[in-house]
Length: 416
Ligand code: PLP
Image (cartoon, rainbow, N blue to C red; front, side, top):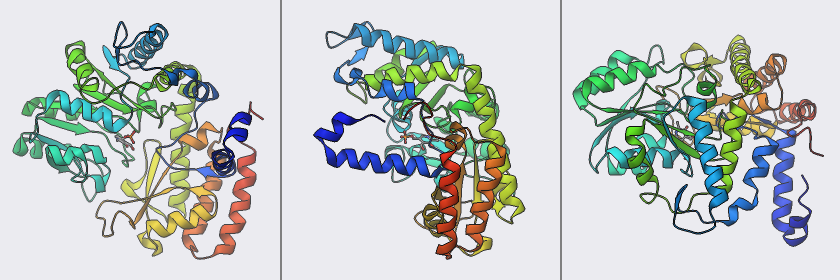
């Protein structure tokens, strides 16, 4: 990338960016929550739109000079509504956690009950974890997966909901490889008089393209990030019916945030346009095909997959059979240029800093153009390292092979 001005004015930060560029270019990114944005998204998010304060909403700002920011935000809102078939969108949340916060602020009072998925079995911090605002402000009750099938059991969740009588039920996960039945959640919520919040942060790209059923129009609120399977800039958004438009907007601003990140909103608009194309649908299909191929390859090498497989962009690996922890596996694979993250698994016996599992996802490598045959190769590399995790010679050898594969799939083919 041409960053010649930065190179001259701030060589220290420029050198750091160069190192990170080399890491991304030469390695394989298998962190399920990451992706590689398009050059257009990159340009919009690095644009002059960052210079402006635009507190408020299009047509009702607290600063002058917002006419072009109004146009950008209107485009982002219209595009995401049309992408998901939603009545109303708020594209200002700086992140997925803040999108969730805004929904909670809209319908909950401190001390109200929320029912959501346990962090250690696939949920997210912002779903009521005791170390997060959501678990501190609200009374959090959590469901997990059935420990035999390692999948959600809607009968058990319904029973919990009847007992707890929560004000909201959150569905959606950070480390759940299976399809989520949003309709079942909405029915449970309706039965107990709760609002239903679908957090599609991970699977937004799959929902937008119909590869995973979408919760929009089914649950009361949908929250999401833009930077995972949706392949946009880092950020969040909220979708809801018109009925909740005003209170949701008020919760985001002035309730929770000040000035929106207008360069990011411009980049979100670019991402929503890209996600509505046939090319993005093909990409999303390939993400899931790649994930399945990776899962099959790992499984045929005796790696146990939580829930036995995957329906989406990620798989969760149980490393217990190999006698290594998630932390050790993350480090060993990192040495070989394969970036993954350690992850707790159902029935976890270790701390979240150690864990017995790994989460691997295919959005980023698929964005680079990799397909099933590359996934088989990556699965073989991961398996070989799991079987011999202390062998640094093997890690060095694989790192060279990874570099060679990566060089055939440039991050930005159109950039020199
Ligand atoms: N919700 C889910 C399900 C997530 O997986 C994540 C992030 O990993 C978030 C919310 C929060 O997103 P952010 O990191 O942008 O706050």
